[in-house]
Length: 257
Image (cartoon, rainbow, N blue to C red; front, side):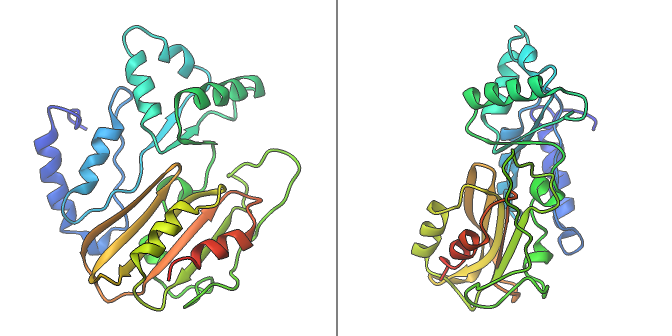
């Protein structure tokens, strides 16, 4: 509120982040919503501020108007930049748009962005990412060491899959200790195609006193260090589309060693 953080309010936004950082032990995530003509990929760079780690850029598009707006002489370039720089694109208004509009929007998006494209509604964990407390907690779906099984509910269907389906696949693993950087590189490259979100808080053997954050949001993957290790569990969680084989996710998480 009270201005655009893409330009004139940048200093005020920095001050706000300083205040928010003081409540780090009371909040799980910080979500920044920009205006319809904002530049979310630029605002996302604030995620590199001390005490924060970047997650991803999510852009919502209206299937009934986005193609017209993208060709508008005044805002078209902005719309195209928003979509092309996104990590995850969610098509909204699926309850009022017809199949023709939705399919045409998906075809158009495939020509202008490399982002993962999903139809709304989507689970909160996919839209905003898994909670940090969930992946480092003591839930029944976590196991220490290599994953051999997890509390997941995969689905297999002949028609199109929708991530709004309650049977999306979630699997997590607690690690026994620091992992090698080579295994992180392998893990990043070997991501199964159905994975739309993943997050990990881990230690790396060449920096065991630092907390390394693994993030997957749609098409992007990042590895960052956001501060000293806090003594919690090394853990990682992945969320995948319905129908994604659980065995593929188990194999993927076990690459971290």
